[in-house]
Image 1 (spheres, rainbow, N blue to C red):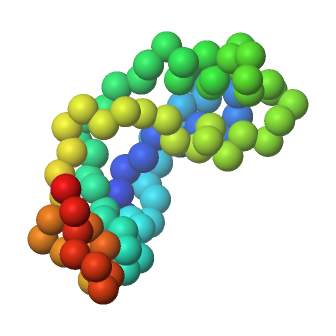
Image 2 (cartoon, rainbow, N blue to C red):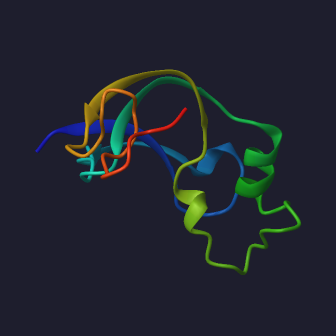
Length: 98
């Protein structure tokens, strides 16, 4: 099993709820790509969601999105699903249009 580092958020709160952990590296499905993030930023809306103060996301809701929050600033392509062509499109019977 190959692992990767991730900062996980399992509950609402301040910076103390951020947890650096090892998780299993996902394998891309046929129509997906795997992107490795080397650096990421956190926007103001991210810390508002994490703290539970963002109006759309209330603390009493189950928030799946609270698991990972970040916006990739530096990323690299790790793996390509078998249905992705050289242009980055899903292979179908029709050619990819730009």
